Length: 371
Image (tube, rainbow, N blue to C red):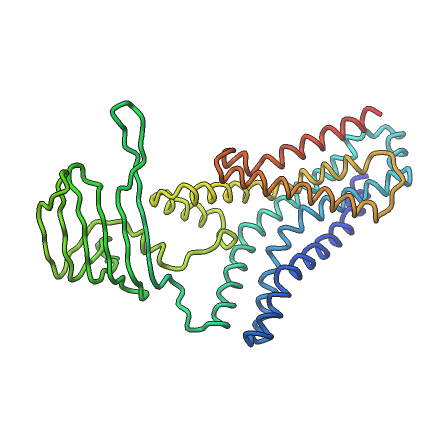
């Protein structure tokens, strides 16, 4: 029975992967690449390369959808042709019949995780770099102007509450890939003493892990806002974090980072203290874990819906799959946004759709088993 069900599930699954991934990459990439070819003179060879590099990302999205389509289509056909009734007549329970689909869904979950962790982020990043080089070969891979980096800290007040205040502000007018120019740093990390550093240029000293500032002035400000001292220098080393340089250099988009790179970026954002970026990245990291497990959820939902006694064709199964997929991703985006807004925790914002549809799948399966 397991071999038979597996054989029946593989064909619609592969069809779904091809159909959904092709549809997604066509809508997202092909029209944009055609516009680039016509308006910007993008070489066709580069466009094909970018097109192929975009494919792994949509294969990741197609795996869960294909799992739902395959289970719903296969079990609906078996139900309409009374094969499931024959299996139940031989003493096979509904739970045992659905177990095959769930086990195959777990296998697809592993495949999705590998693609989403090892292949898709690197391919997305390579596609972005390839497209940028082809369109603007002289465009630097770093931020050229207005590098702004605030660092915050929580201070306990007399009444026991905690207030979030600015601890350090780093600003640079320009960055040429090696040196930053036109810098202003406001440092309030030392109790009872604030300092303002104005410098013509600065660069990161890799050997000493400090910043080398050139041709500048340090203004020491007392707590009563009066100048305590003014120090001019030609070369001065300051113990400041490297984070402004990390921000100035080209950073990857969320879809271009795997979990390890996302965690490294999260540490950088936590130093900066931008809570909105921190929450967004925390939700995205949780979604990298939750997305592969959608395959198991969809496998259970599709098999449970398909085992109901019915007389539906493949077209009906495909239509129901589209409705379920649309509903899931609508809840996925809404819960993710609520997680970023702080209404839900990052974990709940990423996993809530899975829990909801897992509950629906279990409910449908128990209803079918009771008949």
